[in-house]
Length: 157
Image (cartoon, rainbow, N blue to C red):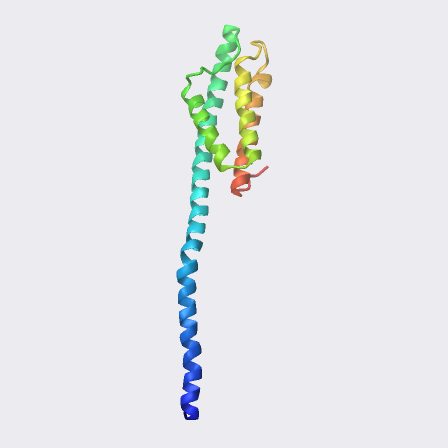
């Protein structure tokens, strides 16, 4: 074997082996890595959809509370939400999704909002507005902040 042939072989073998190794790495690691990032993206999409729906439903519930408060004061009763209210039903559907997709702190914040809504129906009729409906708005704000924080979206103070 001449020195030129030896030099050619010592160059060809590492290049060939490098190509084989890189191809095998691409085959073995490409799909699991791609699947991992796809799952993370899908989770973020589901979280955002749940957050948007939660925001919409709680805004409807809060609007109902504001609207019913004036009527309730005129009728000398506590503002209340009917059990069959579509917004409340949608909120009860969203609760398991929040539990599955978000952290424990978000779950606690959303459950505190639901507790406030339940307490609204049993509140005393002569309570001022700030004691009856305002805590619900504050609980909603805390729940939304917790959900957005889980997603890594900063909210202004």
